[in-house]
Length: 175
Image (cartoon, rainbow, N blue to C red; front, side, top):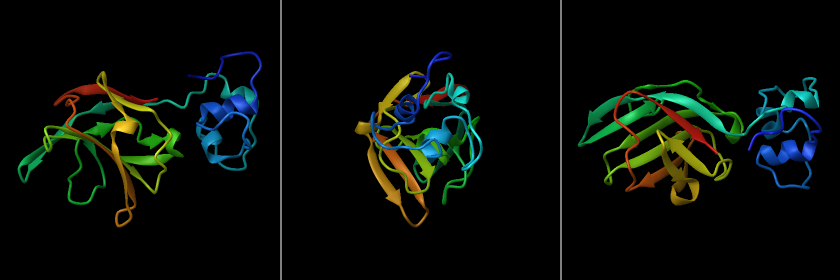
């Protein structure tokens, strides 16, 4: 839920929108809080800058296709070892996940369709509740979660799920 567009706003409300727990210690310079409005560490900020800020990430996914070794991928990849770049994503910086870069959002024909979200860095298994692509909802708690230290990417994998599409541009978000 986005912060209010006007009226009183406090640090606790901003912290909760950024994914923190109400009443816990935080500062306006915390990365998750700054991430709501895209501010760098240590810069001057005013509370009014957070009016309407939302922790929900959203982007337009232009689906690319890649086949090989008995599978087909549909979606977006960039800088993933052993997978060629395909498709595009209008916003690859995920403020919900501390400003991490999204390297892949794609479905695969493996395991009767799988959906993968690959994000740069060692990211906690939190920061969003649902991944929504083209109207299909993938709950974070239904995904397997892993960190690939060799490639420094965190992966959420949903198996045996509906494919979110095979062509065109679709809406992608998480809440």
